[in-house]
Length: 479
Ligand SMILES: Cc1ncc(COP(=O)(O)O)c(C=O)c1O
Image (tube, rainbow, N blue to C red; front, side, top):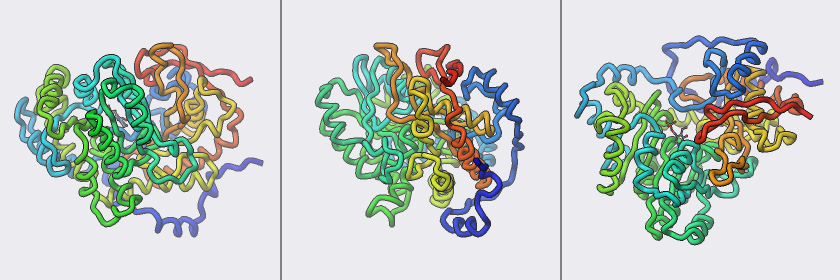
C-alpha cells in the first residue's frame, strides 16, 4: 500500500537533531502575505486554461511558488526605508551615486551601469563582443543568455564538467568549466570564431552548482592566453562565494567579501540579474573592469534601450533598494541560512528517495526527471511533465530546466536534447519557512508513487526565441 508522508514526515526528536545542522534565519517576519490552497479540480482547470504552460498560470492559483528565485524574495525593512530616500532626478541622482559607491566597495571595478534586469545587461553588452557566425563558450549559458547570444547571430556552446551530468556524484563544484574541453573548442573552432567566454556563477542550468575559485582562475588564464574576453554571469555571485568558502581548500578562513573580490579580479566584464543575490524585485547591472572602449559601446546601447545612464531603466527608489540589497546579499549569516534552506530540502528529498541533483546547490532543488519518468522521451519533456503533475497534485509551481527550455536547433529546426532533464524548484529569498519545504518534499515523494501515470507533452505553438515562457502545449496520452 502506498502511504503519503505528509502526516508522519519527521518526528519531533528527529527534527531537533536536524535543527543543529541548518543555520536559523538571521531575521524575523514583520509582514505576511496570505496564500490560498486550491482544490485539485481547480488546479486542473487552471493549468488547462494556461495551455499546460506553468508560466501561464495566475499566481493566485499557486500555493507555493517555486517557479523562480528571481525578483521573488522579500525585501528588508532597511530596503523599504531606503526606497523612501530614492532620488528620482532624471540625471545624476544621489541614489545612482550611492549605488556606485556600494559597487566599488564590493567589486573594485572601474565602470558599472544599472539596467532593468539581467537580460537587459546581456542585450547591451553582447553585441559589443559577438559578431554573426561566432560562438560563445560557457560552463553553461542560462536561457536568456543563449537567447541573446543567438540574437547577435552567434551560437552558444556549453562546456561544463562531466560531473554535472551525474546527479548523484558528490563533486563539490559541479558548475565548473571543463578546462581541457574549453581549449579543445577554441582550437577546433579557431580563436577568431570565439567572441567571448562566459562563466556563470553559480551555474544555474547545472543545478545551481558552484564554480571554484581555482576554476574561475583557470578559465581566465585560457581566456587571456587566447585573448578572448571573459564575462561573468554574476546573478548568484554571493552564493558562489559562500560555497567557495565552505568547499574549497584554503578558502575557509577568508570572508565572502574577500572571495568576491578574487572571483571578479580576473574577468573583463560582468552581467548581473540583481533580482537574485541583489535581493530586489527588479534590477540588473553591467560592469566593465577597465576597457573604456567596451564601456563606451555598452553606454551607447543603454541610452536608446534602457534610458539615461544614471538610472538605466530603474527608478531612483529601485537603485536605493539595490544598494541596500547588495550589502544584505553578501552577509554571511544570511547566505548560510538561505543556502541551508536548499540543503534542508535536498536532505529531505534524499531521505525520501526523490532523485535530485546533489550536493545541494544555491537557489533551487533540481529533480532528476529522466530518472523518475523513463517512459517519457526527451521530446515529450519529462521535466515539464513532472512539474505540471506536481502542480496538479499539490499546487506547487516549478519549471523545466531540460529539453523544453532549449530552443530548437537554429539550423535544422529540430528539438534539441538537453544533457539533463531537471525540474527546477527555486527557493525565493526570505520568503518560505521550513514547514513549506516539508510540504514540498512530501508532495514530491507522494507524486513519485504515481510516476507511471504521468504523461508527457507536445508543443502546439511556440515563439522563435525563449519559447518556453509562452509556448502552448497539449498532453500526450500514455500508451
Ligand atoms: C544565470 C542567469 N543569468 C541571467 C538571467 C537573466 O536575468 P533576468 O531574469 O533578470 O533577465 C538569469 C535569470 O534567471 C539567470 O539565472
